[in-house]
Amino acid sequence: MEYSLQPASLEVLAVVLTWVTTATELQMWAGPKVTFPPRLEQTWLEIGASKKNTFALLDGNQAVCGFGQLLLREPGCVHLARIIVAPAERGKGLGRLLCTELMRAGTELHHPSMFTLNVYKNNAAARGLYASLGFAILSEDREKNMVKMGYRCNPPNGSPPATAR
Image 1: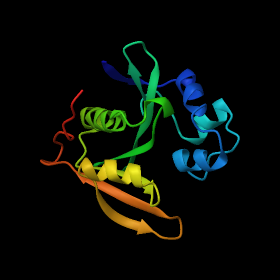
Image 2: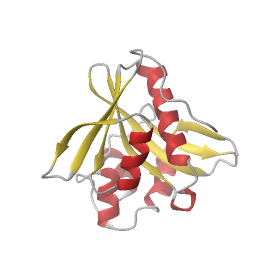
Image 3: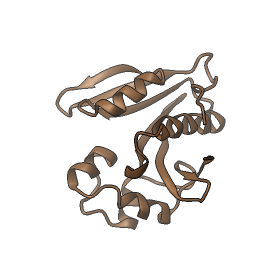
Image 4: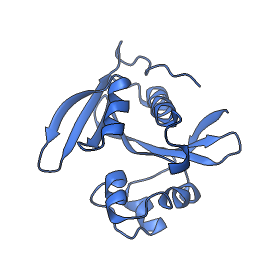
């Protein structure tokens, strides 16, 4: 099946919010500052979403399969945030595809020298995926149980990791 990365909308976020059903799941995905239970417009604002920084992975039928954001936090650095794949689609390689497509879009839009992301230390599946893409641990926040990971573009402003479709 073919997939495409497209700017997200409130309608896309409405689908994504059905994937996170508990306060813990919401925090794991969106961070501690997002209100539970989520309310669509409020959550859009709380995550700082816009059509320029928020993306959906769509399948060939235009069904939402994944979601993620590209945030500019430091010069030359694009931060991947709020990465999630539809529960029914997990284990099929879409997390890898979503990450590489986000990195490709981030490279085209911002020409970074580095990508970063945060992941909870106990999220072994996500940590394994990010490590397999070339992300390395930059720092740990033991109090928040969070790991900051980074991917240095080589050469700087170069291509993200390749992916198979």
